[in-house]
Amino acid sequence: MAATAASEVLDGPVLSLINKRLRALRKKLNRIIQMEESISQGKPINKEQEEVLRSKPGVSALIDELEKLRQPLSEAVAEEVNLAVQRHQVSSLSGGADHQDRPEEAVAAASPEPDSREAEVEDLLNLLYFGSLFDVKPQSDFTSTMLTRTHERGCCLTYDYVTDDATDLLGERDLELISKLGGLLISRPVDSSLSHKNALQRCLEHARLWLSNSDQLIEPNANITYSGLRERLDKIMSSDYFTTTPEMKAPVEVAAAAAAGNYAPFQVPIYSSVSSVQVEGSVSHFQQV
Image (cartoon, rainbow, N blue to C red):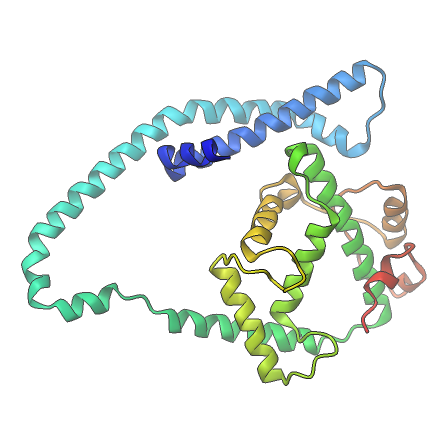
């Protein structure tokens, strides 16, 4: 881990991004090779693994392309840095006397405007908070939503398993914590005696700590920090699950797929008869108090 961090510092953000993408692609290619070996040994694979196998030509092409881009990008970044240094030196020489004459203006120009940014965040949270508070859905919509969310969890974990390092896999607890913090950002805690005004202040505090990548725990008994949870969310955002286009499926198909453990990205259209579809433990687990 320390060696990786040191390498990122030396390479800079551009090459570090290229290297990170290459590592992820090579891991995926290694998994594809392992799947091919399993097939040659007569072992069956599921539908998601078949999809991953079909991506092998694209993965190999991306690895080759990124390898070719590393050297030109390195040279281009070095040139950009040199130009930036030269501009800074010229600007310092031409503007030095002017800044000495007007130090107060220079300080004001360099000062950030945190109040403005915080006001924007608070304004957005006001809408999200009351939008969530007043969102009353019929039972049919609720059942459909729970089916979708239950299946999305399995789909997210499946993609993480086949595309990333097996030593750092996502788990149900990671998804629970992401969901929990999302709720803390836009809603009043259950059985809370807080007024809406005070609840919104607490939501804003969670937002501040999230945006600052804080090392504080998201809750005293949560045993994970805002920065730690951000790493788990970043892991999801960098996986194939994030970029895969879902296909439309009827609720009955979704329920059957969830029961069989066959997870693929999808969306459930809302029908009036959807309330008759149940997945064991899925709706009752998410029932609101």
